[in-house]
Length: 519
Image (cartoon, rainbow, N blue to C red):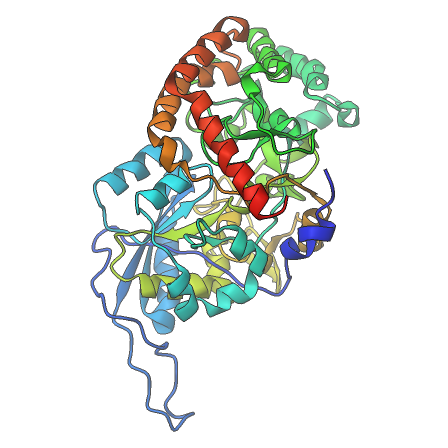
């Protein structure tokens, strides 16, 4: 893999002087006005010979994001709404849905045509399906009229890279666009037992530490896993990555080769070895017994009963999680940083088709890139109540408060606007944003970056594939099921559902894309 420094390093190098983005919502009347927004009522007639711009009618923006629901969410919404009144006369109703029920609850909202305005979107959460079902709106015209500040912040190549068939359907968070994989490990237990993490080069090297934790820390989970977060997170990107968002483990390329030919992950010995390792850990008692059914992953690792868990990493990820969870973590990396189409499409805010005033919503999203105060209220809560400022850009909890006792510790600033305008916690590296830039610039570029699969020709097969996958996949990736026995059974059902046809369609489109882009 070559460095992206020469091809898209500059494209993904993020400026330190940007703004913010985010959005929110209302639980009762999601919209009372459908009038087209005009200029902000903040404009003054006294300073100009021009007549004053008409005031905007009140409007409530209803927004859904996944995460850990917060006790003080309504208080934060109310404070943000006060702040927004004189800017765009908006009331914010942001609602956080726990990760475990996010997909099901949002699918119900789309199916029932529930009125709301903004949703968090990402490539792996059926993003293409939302576009094809017209669940989210095309944004290019709205951006041109009301998103000028936002597009000044996000690099043009990133904005072009998230388009689907030439159309924009989400505003991306301005953040790091590379990712590497590994574990987060409890620092206090590392120190207590004098574990030398410098000796850890591969997941197997953690096994002696897991054994110590199992024997000496009753009730502690050595390695937390769930049906969506398991050992594969820390290993699979080192071997394979998705060239598309077709379906789990399909449309995959081998990271160790240079060609654009898809590989069958399930028949690769490396995949079987990974599943065998998970099964070994499960049988040894290192993995929680409810892994295949666990839904509240974040709540579990925040409980104080977890030693290690798999995570997507970046510079300072351990410090971010430490701040949000109230426990100190340290990261152990197993793969080199990589930029893929999926990572560029990793965090976006999209406008629902049921929004009653998309124009006002885009005005709000635009503010999130240009208003530092707004961004940090959404990310961190109310100044004086949930955080105190140590200087212009550094914050801490108020005296006596921790992440666990705070009523607002969302821990998800990566979902919103321009992260380079986020405050830094006192435990974070003052050079965090410079390191983000270097992380992006030095990362490897995935083959086929920019390719987005159109699943229209195999929609039925993908549905059947996902249904078949659900029967075995959670048990296999968590080690609950013996892969020697159950992987062949799963593959047989996946093939019967149309797995090979899906991969053939991905390859056909990838070849056409490569020819058109001279890859």
